[in-house]
Length: 508
Ligand SMILES: [Zn+2]
Image 1 (tube, protein in one colour):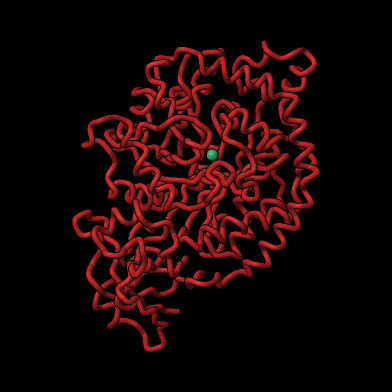
Image 2 (cartoon, rainbow, N blue to C red; image 1 turned 45 degrees about the horizontal axis):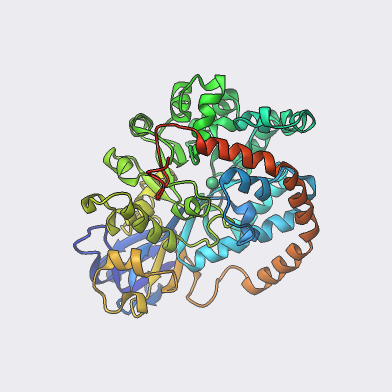
């Protein structure tokens, strides 16, 4: 099936231009076949025509870091530091085990939202409570298959006991509680690898490559080196992105000084010494890192996923954007999870990324430009997904993952500067069409692939029935709260010769 976009401006990464003049784009199958006058010439007589009316055709937005299993928990928690937040957000609690239908519906919730605002690709670092199983993996993948988004999915599951993952707790807890946290998860390495086998064999490359697998260790401190090695081998064998959160919080930096296994090394140095820092790896957050850490990441060609809204919501700190760009590190952008961003909207993420670093210092020559942010959003995301050759721009030969942006909208009227108005003005409401792999999945009014109202109604019903389990989980988490608060305070007060918080530079 061929589709001709007639009279569209085509997004250009060149800041001076921002876009082409009015022209045409021909999509054939899942690929962009031609851009320019020849697109109209080559279009077959039966091609479907989308009248562009001078609107802006852009590459689909890429959400490079996301966790779908908390899609139904928007706005559920107050702003809290990550370690306390996680107590309530993803407890290892059997009553919270979802049914396959529940996992399907919750995955749909954010996928529908993303397609509506022009996001065509998502890297889902999916964690599972209490652990992954083939039927739940299938439910998540089936939702992505049905809704029509491009999804790369990993199983983000810690393998070590809670006490190994956090500093100070062992000495703070009474013995009875300490014993509970000393137990490693019952779902160990062998079973996790079986789940990976299932994910890769069943879903990797499915639907013409629209669905794919990634691997995730969650974070280096949450797994053994052996398990990291197994994941690295899978990543290498199948060319899969390898996701790992790294130094999101100050506490994680303090941990490395506390535990002998790290021998005083940062988590980045530790991972590099194990040989796992690679161009396939996506390091998520990269906030509490020093220059030597960023040098290692640059040297390895590793991508960094920047999630500025989540980092503000959890008070984690600010990633020093310019330090990474100076080193040529590939930065991609993500929402992180719906409970820590509260929207799944890459336009808001781009705006936040475009603004937050302006208070990093007075030298405005080092503030991000709108064009840099768009480069992170499009090419940065494509490279992190291992799709640099096929996604991230509107060019012949690339996959037809596109969004058509209405320029007859408040955000773009009058049109002063395409890049700046995309980053600072647009919020997703101007998206009038979303296409993934050559298929129109959103036409400006409705999704073509799914009955959104029915899914939302079902979500309300399912999750109102889960209130009892959520309340029980919250009460369970309350038992640990005083100790976690103590731990977080102690880590915050530690002197690590580095600060990534704003406003307290003179105090810490
Ligand atoms: Zn995350």
